[in-house]
Amino acid sequence: MALSHDDVVGLSIGTRPDCVDEEKIDLISSYTDDKLVWVEYGLQSIHDRTLNLINRGHTSKDFIEAVKMTQNKGIKICAHVIIGLPEENRNDMLQTAKVLADLGIDGVKIHLLCVLKGTKLEQMYYNEEYYPLEANEYVSIVCDFLEILPPTTTIHRLAGNGLKKILVAPKWLPKKFEVLNMIDNELEKRNSFQGKKY
Image (cartoon, rainbow, N blue to C red; front, side, top):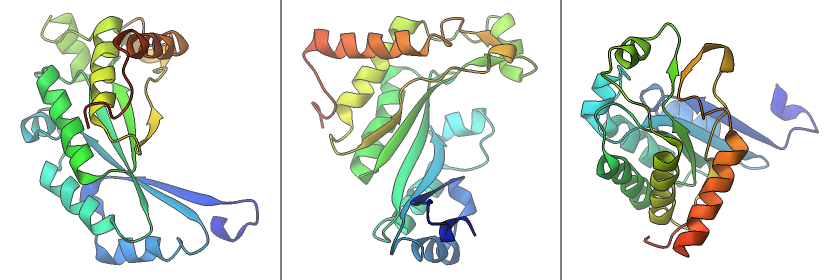
């Protein structure tokens, strides 16, 4: 087992919130005595209408129950969220941040929804039924999101590179470091920081 190796200092498990139960959480918790252990739950959005639209197959209640089951077991919890999901506006996205803040999530990975080849979203994009966020829109929403999260929440990701070979849109997505600099600059312009509105 990997955890028995001297060079392994921790374990990070990515899963869906509807795939855990008390037995699994107790097993994972048993590794926390001498290792750092994270469980990453793919939430994407707190809105069930969005989860249904993107065929997630779980509900916001599943996520909240998984978080509460995992808390106080020595396990760190990271939530994955997607900015720019179809039919979500800024307030919808920020409601997700507020719920994560209220739950006391330990970490967050923020992703941008991107259009990839061979997907239903690609068809929606070419049919002008879906418009990906522009870089400045994404940066503004991410900064709003960060202001809501507690200052103690670890930010694991603010931007991704996307899979260039199959990326359709937005074309700015692969410019990860430019986006990260834009986020820094926007926070500085606002004289703001993570947790300012927590």
